[in-house]
Image 1 (cartoon, rainbow, N blue to C red):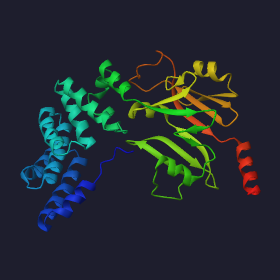
Image 2 (image 1 turned 120 degrees about the horizontal axis):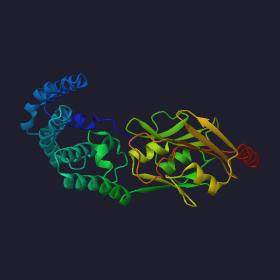
Image 3 (image 1 turned 60 degrees about the vertical axis):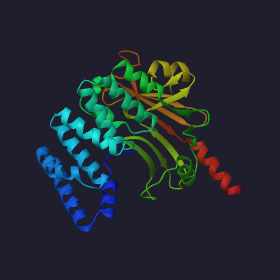
Image 4 (image 1 turned 180 degrees about the horizontal axis):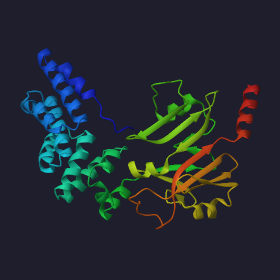
Length: 321
């Protein structure tokens, strides 16, 4: 899960275009993206406009997407809207340009279309909503009750089973290969200590392994998970992403330790039968997510750690084999 722009469509175009056309597009695209990095958006538009009339629809899509982003950053939302309409017409399945079209729809005053596009994006199974939440105007858009109702409709429960020390069906103590199989996760570095997922630039969860490649810790960035994905944490027993220090204590009992954290946060730890659970709370970053008690600290981080006793039991099991 990532919000980084993929260059795969560009490579596909270069494979299907003639050699001269591919060279021209590649050169223009590299120059356009260098210009965009320096905020020379008018230059981007000038470089990519000739490709609006290309025979290859993939080339026209790339041109429309680049031009749309340039107009968007110039604050020319009507022009950006027209460009993104063309990009989405050519490739309605590509989430990035659909989300830009949703943003321009809202910014030019067409809230109904913005809601319709967001509904289709959520229905498609998109899990990384970072771009949707961070474009200009989106803080106001996502505070709208109709938008919150839509997000609630397509929310994906992320179940934490404290009794069995599991998240997403993965239990502490599982082997790395088994965790990767359950999560259908691929790693570019098999020697890395953890398997992670991100929304945009933000880590949303990490499955951490010990030297024997056993899952020893699960870390969930609960606030970023809520802000940038449709996932909603659910612990059962009345505890979910809206959990506060008071409600956690009511359900789990008095914590074994409480520690003040940075940014006026508080970390509370419980030593449960199958895991060590730490919940970190803090004042949420603005805008405050709707649904939680006004003024209450928000759940920021969930850490599930394997108990030392579980590690000893695994070692004894392997000795008996």
